[in-house]
Amino acid sequence: MHLSTLLLSTLPLALSHPNHAPFEPSPPPTETTTPSLSLEFTSDTAFTTALLNSTNTFRRAHNAPAVVYNTTLSAFAASYLDTTNPACAFRHSGGPYGENIALGCADARGCVELWGEERGAYDFGAPGFADGTGHFTQLVWKATTDVGCARRWCGDTRGWFLVCEYWPRGNVLGLFGEQVQAAESGVGRREGVWWLGLLVWLVVWF
Image (cartoon, rainbow, N blue to C red; front, side, top):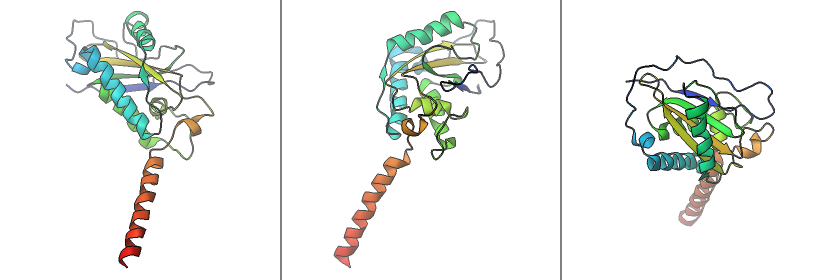
């Protein structure tokens, strides 16, 4: 079964218009369906571990401190999915936290990787918010310290709905330059050391 994955990230602070989905997905099926058996969605421990490991892998690559798992944030995400939005409408909660959402991922790690790989479209030379890279910028926002997530099964045709909350929230207008760093900064330092080693070798042997 192939599921197209839908993604949505929070808009930056200070924008007056509300969060919005790029399009409205089809209503969830009404028949009883069986959830996918992905361990990362069915096991609380595997779910939390996968989210933290994948999130902190991207953060480490972009010089952002590791985040910790916050049960207050995960409880907010769960309440949104189970109480406020039980029909799985693909939209943001409108809560006080930074928020990334995705629908149709095969596992939790895959959702985070889809968010993180938006970095390929991010212009580090002109830092700022864009709909196509907002998941990535929230994911690696340096000031964010906590994350908490929840998931809900939305039927065979739509799969799992993942909601992750972040605090302090990212995507704050005017702060992208200092808060979202390019992975190449670390690579550049290592390359400099490599060229220094080569220069020493040439001096010794020639």
